[in-house]
Length: 220
Image 1 (cartoon, one colour):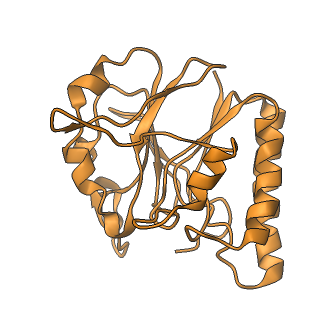
Image 2: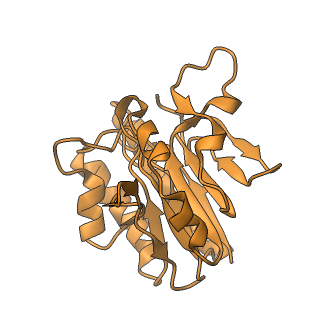
C-alpha cells in the first residue's frame, strides 16, 4: 500500500488574502502529488484548518481540492487538531465528514471504563486506522491513559494510529508544548501518524513514528 501523511495545514490562518490563496495552492500541490503517486489514502493528523469554524471562502476552495481526490474513490482520514477541535460547538471537520469529504477516525467510546476509539478499515488497502484527536492545551493526554490497550492490540492487519499530541521525548531546547511520553502510545501499531509538532520528525527505532511538519508556513 501507499499513503500520504500530512498535518498542521492551518488553512485560513493568514489574514492577508494573497497568503490565504497560497495556503490553498499549497494544499492543491500536495493533493496533486498524491494523485501522481497514486496513494491509496491520505491521513491528516489534525489542524486542517486554523479554527474550528474557518473563513467559508477558504473552506470552499479547500473542499474543491479535497473532493478531487475523494471523487476517485479514495479516502481522507483525519483527527481533530488543537485548533479545529471545539468543546461546545460543531467543528468544520464534522460538517465535512457529514458531506463525505473526510472520515474522522478515533471517535471515543467508553466500554467497561476504558476508552475504545472507533476504528476504520480502508477498503482500498485494507489498512486499519484509529487514533485520538487533539484538544486545546493538550487536554487529550488523559485519553491516552484511559485507552483499552488490550482491545487495540487485538486488532489484526496493518495498523495506523493517528494522533495530534506532542511527544516529550523529542522536545528540543526552547520548544514549548505540552505532550506525553512516547511510552503512552499504544503498542503494536505499524505506523504512528503524529501532528502538532511543527517540524519533521521520524523515529524508526522501536516504533515507526512520524511528524510530517506543517505543509505551508508553520502557523502556531
